Length: 342
Image 1 (tube, one colour):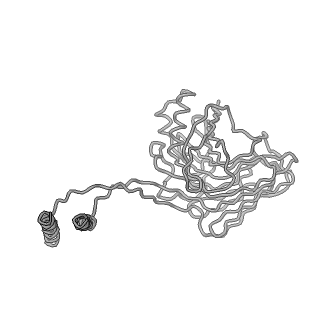
Image 2 (cartoon, rainbow, N blue to C red):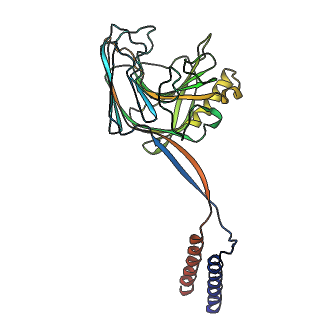
Image 3 (cartoon, rainbow, N blue to C red):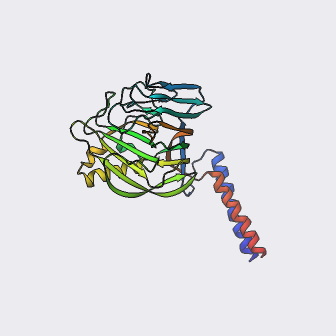
C-alpha cells in the first residue's frame, strides 16, 4: 500500500514539475481542462446622481429635462386646460420622487388616461429630444437582437383612490421615427402594478406564466394579455397585466421573454407574420405611471423610483487556469495522504 502511495505521489510530483518547467521556458503545454460557463452581468444605472425638479401643470403639461441617458417628462398629454393642480418630478441622489396632485382633473379628449409622468430611454417616438442611449443597449434595435436584456426597477407607490397603473411603455416600430406611431407599429405595455378599477386597452386574449425576480427571488408570475389591434392609421397595443400587482419592491424581468410572447400572441391569435414582427425595431422604453380621474373628479397619488437599471447578461466560457490545475493536483495529493492513513 505504502509503495503504491509513494509511487503515485512521485508521478504527480514529476508531472507538476515538468509542467511548471515547460511553462517557465515558454513552451506550449497541452493540459486537458474543463470549461466553465460563467454568467456575467453588465449594467447601466439610468437614474444618475443629479438634481432635477420638474413641475407639470395645465399651462405647462410637458415639463421635461434630460439627465444622463434618459429624459424625464411630466407628460400630461390628455389633461384639459381648466384642470387644477400639478405634477412634480424630483430627482435627488439617484432617487426619483413623483407626486400627482390635482383637485380637479379633466380630460382633454377621450376619458382614457390623463397623463403618464415618465422616464424615457432610447429615441423618443413622440417628438425626439431625449439623450442618446447607452452603448450597452443602443436603441433602436431589431427585436431579433433582444434576448439577454434585463430591466430592473425598485419602486413604491402610494395611492389615494386614484385609478392608476405603473408600467413600462415600449414602442416598437417598422421605421424609426420621431413623428409618432402609425398602423403596423406596436405599443407594448408591461403593467407591474394597477388598481382594480382599470383594465388595459383592447380585448382579453389569454393568460400566461412568465418568470420575473421580485426582491431577488424568482417567481413564475401570471400575466393577462390584452390586445387592441389598431385599425385605420392606429397602432396596435399589447398589454401584459401582472395578475398579482406589486405596489412596492424590486422587480427584474427579461425583456426577451416578453418579445417571445408578443410574437406568439400576435402571430397565433391575430395572424401577424412572425418575421415581420421580429424585424421591427424597439425604439423607446418608457417607464412611468398612467393615471385617471378619481371618483371625486381629481387625481392624487405619488410614487418613488429608488433604482432603475438595464442589465445585459452574457454567458462567458472560461478555461480552467494553470493555478486551478495545480491546486487540483495538490488537493489530490492531500486526499491520497489522508486516505492512506485512515
